[in-house]
Length: 170
Image 1 (cartoon, rainbow, N blue to C red):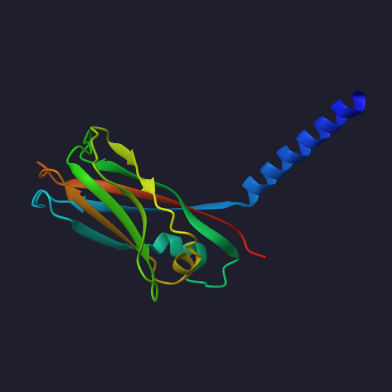
Image 2 (tube, one colour; image 1 turned 30 degrees about the vertical axis):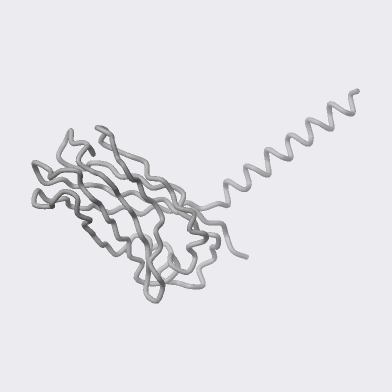
């Protein structure tokens, strides 16, 4: 009986340590940008805003030989940066695309039929597969496409926060 208990404890310790090692070697790197939603933006019309992801490039420097692999989107969120106390009730849909020099654009996150008075919202992640080629290339671009239910009464600054995850390459 003691051997069974000791074996079970040893197996549990090994499994916990494997999970700990995996979480230590998995990398998460952020990307943030702001999107200005002007009062003149009409309702029921898709509008696009593009930003070059220079902060992601500092992680890899456009280095296609960066020692990472299996890059995926792990989190996508939008929130009202200004005005203070603002909410996302004017939004109907939001879509986030990524691309880079020489790659096609890929939809990584979106949300349709938005109905919230909250100041932040987690987007639904699209299973786009691995994004290694896009993230490790130079000129990573993030395009935010949104549609409003109604015009805003004042300019609004929306923060787009993305997190990418990867594992070390051998």
